[in-house]
Amino acid sequence: RDVSASHADKHGPGVQNKKWDEQGKAKLLSLVEQQAGRQLSDVERRHIVHGAEEHELVYSGLEDTMVMACQETRATAVSVREMRPPSVHLADEVSVFTNRNMEKKTDYRTAAFLNAISKVRLSVH
Image (cartoon, rainbow, N blue to C red; front, side):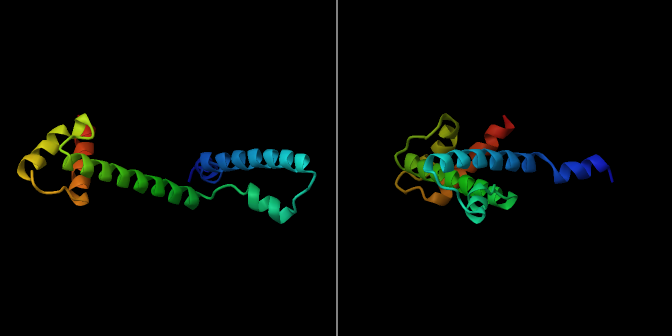
């Protein structure tokens, strides 16, 4: 195995970003301590300065993705119900569904399907 790859695994961008983040927090915390005239205990300092672990960043990213997907799905469902596409990209897909189902409400499953079709279409073009 390549030694440099092993080094990159242990000291890659994620670790460097975490250290940078921790150093920035430590500097800010020192300023706050100075202004407050109080030193924090080592336990308090470690708790505040501690940078995010990789799994915490992954969970945070997944949460953001899910929130955005839910917002997009809701916006599409409402727009289709009102028969006005939320974006130019969905215009063709929306017209297919609204012409067939003029009287029906668009559910979230259909709205998510429309969003998926639109994203595939954008990635192909």
